[in-house]
Length: 581
Image (cartoon, rainbow, N blue to C red):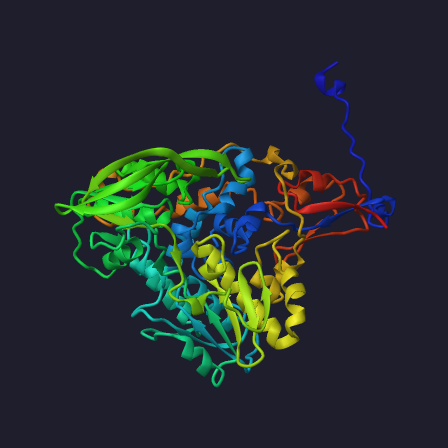
């Protein structure tokens, strides 16, 4: 018998009729839903950026759309991509898998791409309103306030005392952290949206009295331009300089040569910037801090870079007296000891009995905190009905325009992204005040919280698609990590230490398009659909429908049996399985 005779024929049953009439969805008692949720990084971002979507669009090469997604919530992507402390990365779910996404690096890349190709944003704007608002101070808080108010349909005038806008970004941040072209480009982009900035306009109490004839509200965001006095003998001598003023002199282009050893008193970002600037100008810098290094309010990454550049740090010492002797400053330093810690782990310190020492230096720079330029800018000096918000204070006097204090005047954390958050909240509060009254401000703002807050979304406030997002915050255990591979975080390219010390050139270098896409592609895109089609491919009933004219997915419930396979295999928890009612 040959091989052909031993072969058993393969018969495949086929039906000439459709099984479409067998609607298996009637078996279902569980129902899968597309249910986009909130990523933890977005809740950690004070500006409430939709980070998961930004990374998704970047990974797909949709750079303009990703950039526009940022600037709907934050008008300073190029600035924040450089100097923001990026708290978003501390809550990135990817940290539990390998390493956090370099969110700030991708944000900077998108801003640079928009600048390189002169991209023009297409942003939604509400209908024009009759009210007009004055903004005092063209720092990040004031500019952000005007930017968001323009989106909401209001006319704004920004008044700035300095000859150029930017506030602390222009006059207090060294060029090695924030190049001037980056700041100017973003301010120009904001002005192109309809924000009008008047420079060289010194504002005083009389301005507020006159404003009632021209404006319906005034936002005050003058910041903290004045260094707090230490309160010790000798701090008024000529060799003792204000740290903020020193940085301003450098940014004005003055020729400064702080030769010899300089003592910098303080532990914040200003102290770090002063010390690093001294090193670049040829001097030697020693930071004196009354607590421990781990207690310093300065960003840890900046402290580490300062030490790498040769700045010295002396902990647990506090100056108690300054005297002059033969052209030098003699600092009497009181040694401190730890007497406990607060709830956040920051040390409480006390003088260590009579242990003192003397330090001889050529220059002394004070960087011990900042305060408003005058008492009239203090929100505590409020009159009339007031409403304290998370990042702003609204004062509604019996007569005259409404006042809103924001930025450093009200923020506990002094950073550019917190200033943007303050400006956004102030714009929302004024819009609600004018349209619905003061009683509606709190509930309407709370409806715009990102997740559990306190961050706010302007897109949600303006009725955008993001308002349908579930406030549930996706945690790491809800991510299906079987669909991801281990991949290291991008290494930020930087100037070498020797190159840094020779000039004020920017330290962090640009990254390529390929690196940006690769880094963004590492993102879990927690809680949002990125059209990976796992739901489509794993559905045994072919009940997932892909729309031809758009990227949306939907479920044909006539045939979905509610097995939940699509929900389980969704890598990023963008689906939910609920009991059928």
